[in-house]
Image 1: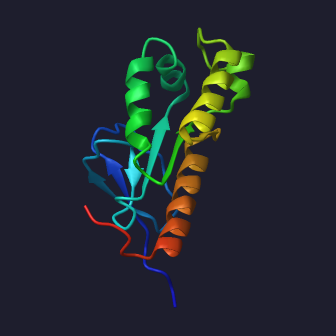
Image 2 (image 1 turned 30 degrees about the vertical axis):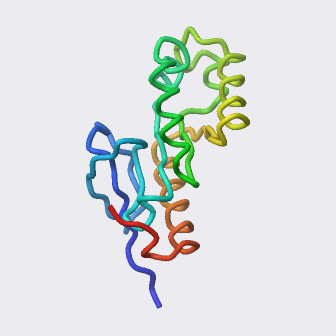
Length: 150
């Protein structure tokens, strides 16, 4: 039996959603936290997506906002932050940032160890879309299609 198509809900404030694999549907929905989920995972999962510059700036002058985002994400059993870059891009200067690589790595370690929120680096929007679709599909299989509602 062929699985039902996956429908990813994308926060209405997301200006440039990442591309998803063929067959993945998308809908817009307002979310107080995170950028993406599905209807079945509404109460269980949120993924926060960041471009590389936004992630770096959120570690400095945007830190209070990031800390609030992290606190809200902690309400979900499944959560992560996905950055559309390679971590090495900060070291090599491909991503222009005043944030030192050690501060980035230290912040990542803190988010994981203190808050249980992993930060994943995927170097292209296409990989981000494939990763997110894969996570949602597997979580829906684990939790069942009716895991949560809006």
